[in-house]
Amino acid sequence: MTVDRIILVYDADSGVAALLLDVCKKLFGREDCALCALTYSPVGKRRAWSACAKGLGVAVEELHRDRLPADWGIARTELPCILGRAGEARPFRLLGRAELEACHGRVDELERRLRARLDTPAQAARP
Image (tube, rainbow, N blue to C red; front, side, top):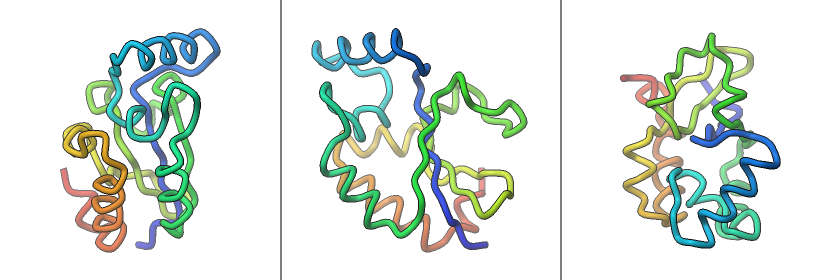
């Protein structure tokens, strides 16, 4: 199975109010979502993440927890996470919450982990 896109699923809601709250949290150094910390600064998308995403060779989509389809079977306690998807098949987990937290805010570590999983996607689907 060849992954043709990854889906970043943030442990945050969509919308203007949620965005403003997130900006305030970032400004005060309080980040609740490890994926948000890796991909966004208080003023927008991190350059290092943008460069990483372009170099992965797959499409990158973003999704907030309030837009997560229930039929994907992903519990809120599993967020944030990064999913892989091949065509219209059901997405599967590439990286979970603990793996994102283990990156300690370093995009280079996130990229290393993503590339390893994209090279062996069958193993990523294991629980």
